[in-house]
Length: 384
Image 1 (tube, rainbow, N blue to C red):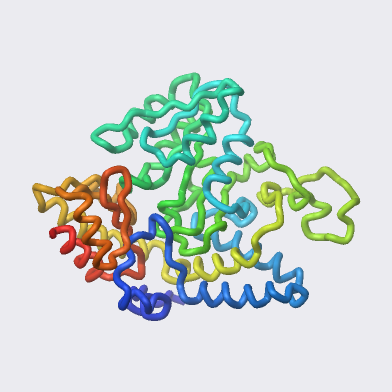
Image 2: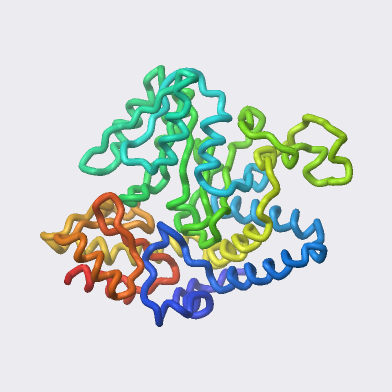
C-alpha cells in the first residue's frame, strides 16, 4: 500500500497546535519539541508508573523491543544491532572504551562537538592520541581527513554525520571506505542527522553510530541508541558491566543469583542497567511520527525550507552563510552571520522565534512541523 502524502500542515495541526500562537520553533538542533502523541504517552506512562504493580513485565520488555526496532528502521540497521542508550555521548564512550584500539592516533575534525573529542582524549594512558584535522574556510576539511586516514598510525576516525555548528554533512561512504582500507575503525556521532536524512548503515562501512533521541527524533531527554556493526558485537568489550546484559538475568528475575558471566548475544549486551522504559515509550511515540511521514520525504521538505535561508543569505552582501549551499552537504541545520549578530538574535527572541547562537553564528534548524512562513518570518527579523 502506498503511504499517504506527507502533509506538514496536517502534522503541525495534529501534533503542534501551540506553534501557531507561540511563534515558530526553529531550534530542533538543540531540543526537538515532543509531538502531542508523545506528550500523551508520557502522561499515560506517568500514571502507570504511579501504580507500578499494574504494569506487566512484558510491557516493559515490549517497549524496549519497539524502541530498538524503530531506531533500526530509521538508520537502516537490524534491531539486534541496536542498544538503547541515554544519549549520544554514552554510545561514543562505548566505542572509545570498548573497541580494541591499539596505540596510535584517532582522527577527528577540528570544530567537532565535544562528545567526539573528550572520550578519545581520555585514552592517552593507553598510548592513544586524538588529532584534530584543521578546518578549511571554516568547514571540515574532508579531503585532508581522508588523506590522513592512510597513515599507518591511525587507528580510528570519529566524526559527526552532520556538524552541530555549521550543518556540514560528512560523506560517510567516503570516510568509511578510507577507514576500511586502512584497517581503522569508523565511529559516527549521528544525532544532528538521524531522523531527517535517509541513512542505510548496512550499505556503509560504519562500525559504531550513536544518536540521542531528544533532537530531530523529537523524543525526551535521556533516550537514544548506539548501533554496533554485527561483526563487532563480540569484539567490542563493554567498559561497564551489569546484571541487565547477561543471558541469565536480563529477562528472568526469578534466578538472579544463578550467576553466569554470559553476555546477551546481540547489542543488548551493552545495555547494562535498568532502562527508563517510560521514557522510551515516549520516544517510541515520537519516532513513529517520522516513520509515518517517511524520512526521505522529511529530508526533501527540509531541503526546501533550508534552501530558503541559503538563497536569502546568498543574496545579501552583508550576510555570511556558514552552512554549505550544496543540498548534498547540508541537512536541517543552517548557520549564518548577519552584520549585527547580537541584535539579530535579540530581534528573533523578542518575536518568539526559537533559535540559538552557536560558534559565532545564528543557527536556524527547522523541522517537518515548520512552514515556509515560519522561515520567512525569521529572515525578515534577521533583515532588521
